[in-house]
Image (cartoon, rainbow, N blue to C red; front, side):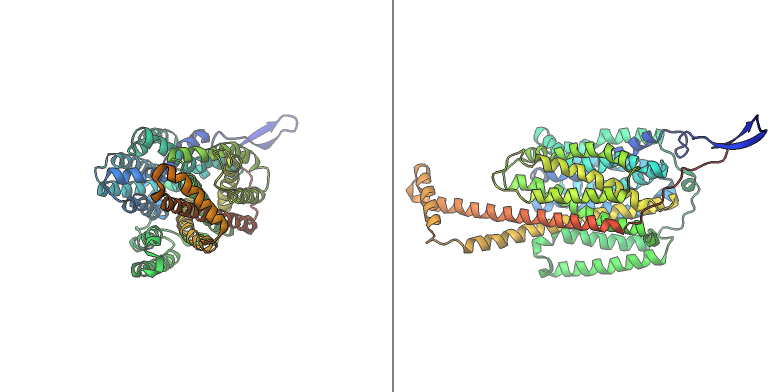
Length: 537
């Protein structure tokens, strides 16, 4: 605030600018606001990762196939993607704080019903409700956080917030595996209940709506835009989840679903562009930094979710680790994030964020290349250093990216921007996982054919190995069964080698994508350093 000070010597007055006490949060320490909004975000992101570990146990407990159990993930992602861009309208209509509290309560209650579900149909319905409640948690939390700090301090705030985004997907598989093995898969959902209760308490006490939210004038709900969003996002998730099973475009239903996706997406873009007061205002993409940020967050979603999904899968499918053991192996990524987040908070206001962002993408790409050097002889600690560095690099990516993308936006645009920003990250992650899964299957089949073509019965090494295995097995299963058993073991080895090379390809492609992102960072325009707000008394 500004105050007038009288100078006795000259008899004149001069204006002095005094620092205000948390002017943007109505007297509440902004770091309490940070913790309050980080809790629901951490809970939502953690749940996205934690449920994937429990899928086989859910299928067995509810008498469902593994294919049917995947709808536990798909139903959540569909509801989550639909509500993300709509969160800004609901926040302005009902108040950001009230809507955030409502979403946390819905998510927490739905988590209880997920854990108590007696059948697959009940858990799917509960997951839809959970996704609807969880979809708005990230954009609401992020917009509240960004508006609670001056521009120069946003890097530090986003560093703390980034812990929830980066660490939760890493802790999810480990915690989910431990809860499932120790207690039951139901506790993978029950774990949300105490976190949700604490989040409701802290948000009620420390979060307040700014004036532009309290006095916002909101138009009618955009039913057409919302319907088009439901169509294209729902078709996208179904195609990504089930397309590989039916050989993608070889199936008629996939072609029809893609046609509906394209028409729905085109209609939604036209509706959102021609109706700025609709569900989503796409005119915000005219801002160069935000447009670049949306492009990079989409690619980042692909990179991070490919690595998070594929690396534990490698340990389980190729090396035979349990879900809990695989989670422990990749868990040190969280340590790297904890170390990197305070550092990026310190450097964010002192260095060009584009340089930090480029360094983060390059570090992530190098780690992906190191993952591409895996073999069948690695131990639990072989990849410890690159796993640690991956978490460290991701903290250098998320914080500067979010800061740069929103640095040239007004506070009134934050709600609309964060909803679109987070939606693109989720969509990028879904597409990345689908592409990686398809690549693993098809590249493994390719390498199986390639390796098999080089092996013949007349090959001396083949003959030597098969005879040695037959002799060994003959002592255990008898001479009559030894030959077939030896062929089976060698074929299994062939499959293992083929799958290994497929994983190597996926890791290397992820590295190339990260290096491309490092170059695209310079599409950002360096934001001007704004002076702290001065409020007249």
